[in-house]
Image 1 (cartoon, rainbow, N blue to C red):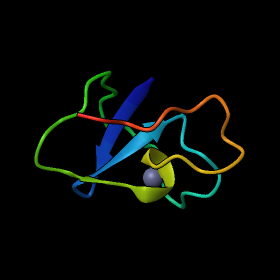
Image 2 (image 1 turned 90 degrees about the vertical axis):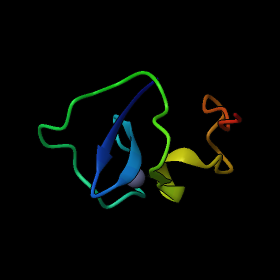
Image 3 (image 1 turned 180 degrees about the vertical axis):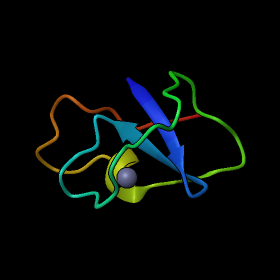
Image 4 (image 1 turned 135 degrees about the vertical axis):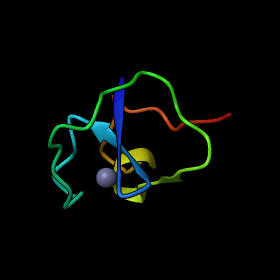
Amino acid sequence: MLYFVQENKLHRFPTPKRCGCKHKNEPLRDTIPHGVEQCAFCINYWPGDDCYQPISD
Ligand SMILES: [Zn+2]
């Protein structure tokens, strides 16, 4: 899974529809950076997201 940071929030790429943010030219990364907030829409497990796993440290 890929992620990117926008406005100090960690989002998933590709971004799910429920998240209003759009990836622009932020660098994509496959690790979770520390010190950034995690976008609840992107990162949290939501019902119906069978293929998404919650993140645990
Ligand atoms: Zn997001």
